[in-house]
Image 1 (tube, rainbow, N blue to C red):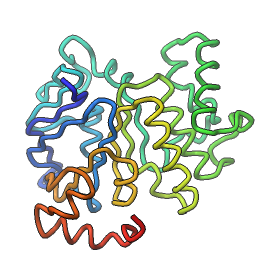
Image 2 (image 1 turned 60 degrees about the vertical axis):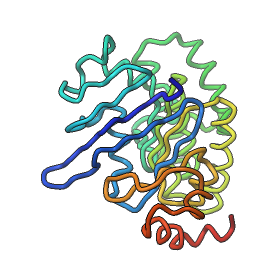
Image 3 (image 1 turned 180 degrees about the horizontal axis):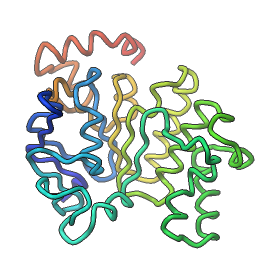
Length: 257
């Protein structure tokens, strides 16, 4: 199958609040799928479900053809492989980077590789490769997160996520806290990186212009449900509901597209 990740009828509630309702979603290999929608609509919850930080109440999550069973604890089997094994195949960039403040840029990037006992020469070669890929100066690798700019911290977070050459990259509003010029530069770099690596990516944003620029497929979510998916032209010209039209009209940045 061409989908690396498939969600089938996935639902999740927190107490009395429903976060996602019976979601069906395919994440195609080698493409960037973008989840977009208003705050609190369930976008970030979907990423956390895929990486196994939380479990669905009902439904199935299938990664590379293997089911993650909703009725099993997070660290139980994934049809022959543990959830920890799956997490090593997934890179995860959270909001504002999530770097450890007591570790240098180098320490943050190499953290999981060190934990897995990767050879030193292999790690250093990969580190140099990632610095070139993300345009991050190797001279800054000894700095701590507080000594780096917002854009530099996001590049470090991206390198950490890419360190183990993940099959799937999850990005939760990675550029949301950056100023417009830095954000635009990183958007361009991300687009080039995804194309060069042929990376399968699932990205969360609330900015439709960003979704249109980076995404091969846009998935609009509202109140825990997928309202429409397709290209920006599909959403603009064939809105599935009044909410789709209202959401697009509220995005003033679309004037430049």
